[in-house]
Image (cartoon, rainbow, N blue to C red; front, side):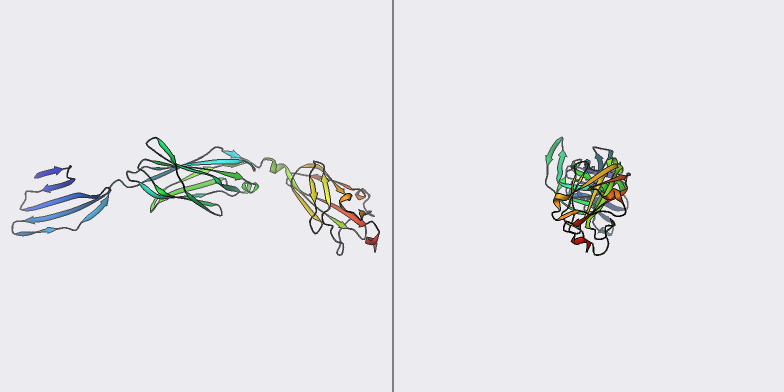
Length: 306
């Protein structure tokens, strides 16, 4: 056997000293693509050339890692996620798409998005585009991650009360063409926080024509009536005389109807419940419960009795 190797010319010939001669040629066509051909010949045999085979050297490979600055959160908190997308292959990776699926109750803050590339210990900010479809955030980078380079992504999310009903688990995957990374995940522990100790307060202000303290058909609600809570909250009724207040601290809560906001009306007497003959209402709210405060008024001229 006679073996000839010439790496400077980037080809290889293998000669077999047999009744026939078989040679193989390998040469580079472009930086990451190689062609392979074979020729078979011998005594009284015309040389036959095989088909050309192409193969890629140093394929792209993506690896993604996701972290966050917190492991436990409550509604109202802000979480900063960081993703590192590394090209572990020997070829550049182009047109990167990052798909990040957020858990229920986490809102993506678009303006917080920051992306940079790290290569040879140098970090450079880059421009990307992003879109959101429900809980899925998609980030597109039209540039290239060099071999062994890293694309760094950071963004913030806000935690809403809906997060308490979610899993807190986040999933992210990167792709460059048909090359996909592993799926990175991060799990947040969602604590109810103050929301678990709160209740909801509802009520209405209405014209009580029969003085029973309950709104009946034909007894209209009063819009723009003002109720003051014991903690200083000011509540305004809607067009139907109704109001609601969420996230009220549990315990004994007092609401007072401001009659100065209702010119021409006075407090309606209650013929069945003497404690309601007052501008104030006292309710006891348990955590995660709902309480009611109704206020009955009557026209000061007495027209409401007709």
